[in-house]
Length: 515
Image 1 (cartoon, one colour):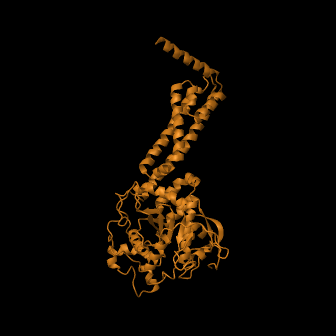
Image 2 (tube, one colour; image 1 turned 60 degrees about the horizontal axis):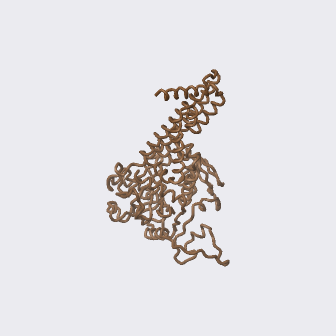
Image 3 (cartoon, helix red, strand yellow; image 1 turned 90 degrees about the vertical axis):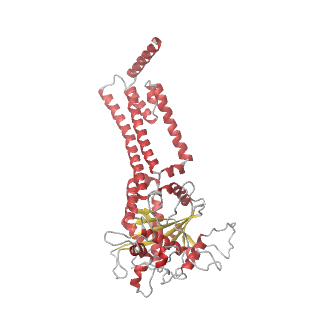
């Protein structure tokens, strides 16, 4: 006991001598080193066991972070949509930051000269304060972003047992939801609800059919003026609308209340609760009808509120699009009231939230086909704008806009698997299924829904892998989307053409511009 006590006294004496001999600049340098590599300062200051433990823990955390970042990236992304894991992550970030700050302060107290003048002590305190702020500020932002993500997930995506849907899959195999499902079909709805407008009309109806193996995605845009939209025979609505949602003998103005765009509002108003318990009866109605019209089983819907859409674009810092035609900001075509402002044609135009909203939905002087193309290009531009640097610096604003933007019946339990699928979609091909409007009579009172189902089925059927061949000089290959989309081009019964969005959204102004 005596020798051990003497040894400790000798060690403390040596530490005091070292502290007296240590200059202020050297102590500041060692404090900075201890901030960069926690534990070093404790070891130099004489707390060797504690310092070794902290240093080992630091190196272990760094190694774990590198390992997870390189080999477990998909698991990290999946965890970002699980509220319980997000809460744990926020606590861990706060604990690491607090521990780091404690180590810096403790290291400096051991490293600063015992005989330092007040000026030297003030400089040391200033350095420690700056180092602590450099750790606390990013940690606080990180915790706020994680909690904002948790709030977004909890507000938009409700668990399977807590939400009500009359049309989504009844059971979800969380571990492998795509095991027996070659395609996932999502219904994308754009609602025009606003304080000055009664009711909600879905001016944008797009089916996104995703190949769960490759991530290749086909977009099917449904014209909003479709009438006599059908229902499955096993749907309660088929009894009321055996020939589809429509009426004979109406004027063009009268048909407006019997078009696809009006189904979301009018059918639930006329038959409340007919499909069963639902958190969004309008979406369930449109899912059933669009599924029957296209021959697809629609799994889930994503509904976008246009006011929230503008906020999201603002949060992203705007989007960049190619404007191929004059796009009206306002105006009423039927009343011949021209708009007061236009978005003029031009490549790589950067649009803020309000201008992006008008780019996606501007109607004056444009038909539905033009609007559908612009809407798909807007979706692509938003994906491009959501780069890592933007997400990191503006995520709280993005998450806040997201809460006002989205409604869906996708359950929380499915989100990790959807993240994995989204990674495939990002590396896959996104294309548009071209619909022959005239052949399918999509602008007539009775569209050819049987032909529409055949068109969609051909577009989505697996393409056989064929060896690459050299095109003879007499028949040069073409990548012109219009040539590819021409009915009957190349073969007697070709599969419907699909156009890559990168080509469809390129800058190629042509034809007369609206005036």
